[in-house]
Length: 111
Image 1 (cartoon, rainbow, N blue to C red):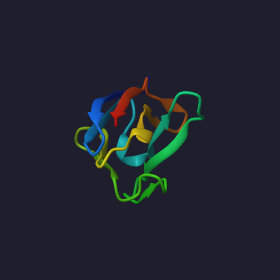
Image 2: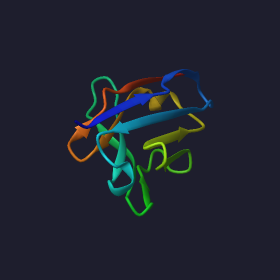
Image 3: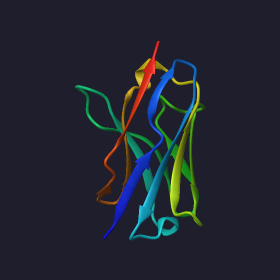
């Protein structure tokens, strides 16, 4: 059974940083594409960043230059380093691989 468990969310002031983690079990993270998505209140879930099995990454325009997705294959964990956070980054952040989703972690950025 595949499980994705996010952690690292919280409340931070604008300009601050957070690092989200997504620990995977029941799957080998290194051979699967992984993604971070977010959903703000009243809005649709949107793609934030992806990392492919080969290591290539892709980012939404709104987070380019501020967020970095990475993975630790030994720990079977994917990360999202978020710097220069803005109030509009406030959302529930979800980890995804194929049709598996984590439970989400709340990120709140105060102005």
